[in-house]
Amino acid sequence: MRVSTGMIFDAGVSSINRQTASLLHVQQQVAAGRRILRPSDDPVAAARALEVTQASDLIAQFKQNQDNASAALGLEETQLTSAIDVLGRVQELAVLGGTTSLSATARRGIATELRSRFDQLLGIANSTDANGQSAFSGFMGATTPFGGSVDSILAGNEITYLGDDGQRKLQVSPNRFVDVSDSGNDVFKRIKNGNGYFVADYAIGNTGTGIVGSGAVTNPATWNAATTKNVAIRFTVTGPVTTYDLVDTVSGNSLLTGAAAPAPLVSQRTYQSGQPIILSQVGPPAFDLGASISVKGAPASGDSFSIAPSASQSVFVTLAKLIGALEVPPGTPADDAKYMNQIDLALTNIGQASNNILRVRTGIGARMNELESLGSLNENLSLQYQQTLSNLQDLDYAKAITDLTRNQTNLEAAQKSFARISQLSLFNYL
Image (cartoon, rainbow, N blue to C red; front, top):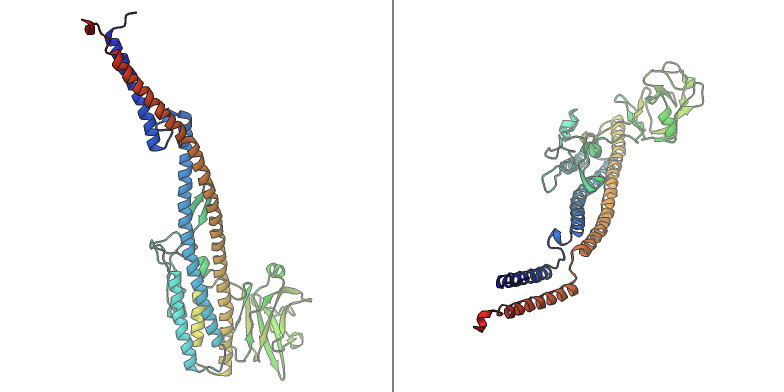
């Protein structure tokens, strides 16, 4: 085979180019600290690295969502803590006002502070986050949820709620969405009044000094199964003896005799101030509400107190009714009894509102604990992904430096040998 001078030059240049390219590739690996600079370097490892990188990026996004969720829940928890503090002060003021010895001026002074607390609580309910989104408006973040005032409620208008029942969510893991808000309805409006089972109230026309307690359900299963839950305690005074009858306010019949109320005097129970009134009877007729209630003071003949299943009442209505009671000046003993009934009922309802907000805040705490656990899991996953990517992509510097030195030597040898071979020409001997 004849080897021409052109072939010698072409082969030499090709060899030098290969050695130069190989040296450059290793140098780029060293400079980047990566073994894989392009997919063709290791197709299998490159494909796997892409999958791991995508999974790692997804974890990073979930981490950001977890941080955002924690921030939103932290803001809500702070607002609810403030609301509980406000209700704590309201309770103190209600207890302070729970005496008939206060003057009209003292009552109005307490009412003035309560109006300020009402506005403070309304401000908490209308609070927004750093993005201007209302914390308690459901999905309608751009809407101010609550509107109204003490005077509008006392005039017979309920506080308005312009939000909805939605709970905004964030995805914090591949299969977990966390609620990052709570509906204002659930926090401030859907609150059971009374003791949570029933509410005891006085009749407007009462003329005695009887004061009814909040009562208690001793057997919830029996209460839930009872068909008659709307009951009136009606008093009759005959000389020194005061008796009462329990009346089904739906049918109008006495629960103690079954007859249309008022029942005969001999069938009525004797009243003793402060003693529990058991809402049951072995019979006949037999009935059992699984509950009891107490009345203290001296009810007048014809006075009555009602028992009805608990209904939803907003915390704003509770505060407004308390303020309305305090703004009425002292009057007759019967007026004082009505006042004390209003104060006692307000205290019961304030306790219910505080418990409801505590329930919501407990749920927030549970969600924040879950986010903390997910954050720890994500940190472990992120570390594993980084280790996997390092094994797939990172450069073995000892091997790379060895390859760089060897390729540099090969290039120098190719260059020197080409310089010698290129001088092999007959023209050098003419």
